[in-house]
Length: 307
Ligand code: AMP
Image (cartoon, rainbow, N blue to C red):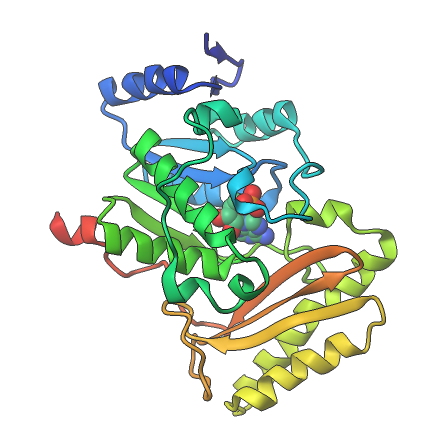
């Protein structure tokens, strides 16, 4: 049974409940925007919901902590799970349906044997440090597209490599979903919102600001005329080196769509960083040049081109 909340958000925990809700939306002639998440919703996720409302009639949020995308020793078992709070937040932003399947509903045959391989775009950046991660992400996103059949799906640019890979998967496999990418929502001091920020101690939280501060320094240098990869990445590195509790994994200059490494930055090139504050892994990025367009905006997808 699906339960209807006062704010009229429905919750589907199984495939059957999902299809019943989607049938209702189809009968009403509503187009659907999907916002896939792992829950522990914050203002970053909710900004995707707000954007999704501008792109379709009904917004569906999926909440699924996908075991396939966690490596050995990562935080799968302690990842925050707060479904009733998430549902309240979703309802407060006008979400029509929360799809929160269990592992057995998402993977009824057990771990899938046919999976989506990210290829070379999954090998650099985070892919170098999280083997198998993007295969897990793309596989679950392809399944969510198949289960929900949205017209549009909204992803955050905070996860730059994920967004680029999902867009590429959609084109390569013609999944028929417009993939939209939204800007990063930050705390007042610049730290990108993340469900994992909850793991940070007050000291680790304070140090974590350096990731964004380094990116801002590099962006300022770019706007002052510096375009060399080495000079720009060094600015981020030196900001992070100043903090004893931080450990840098990478800082790289790439094209935000193709993820190809760049030696020379142009307007809209991405500077991406990943590292640890204490035991918590954090990622962030900027598109150099303040008025650079988001990679997800303004470029027609295969669906739009076909219309
Ligand atoms: P997650 O629940 O971490 O898997 O994230 C779900 C979606 O929210 C992904 O598309 C993320 O890129 C996006 N997201 C996470 N944090 C932020 C943020 N601070 N600003 C905008 N989008 C975000």
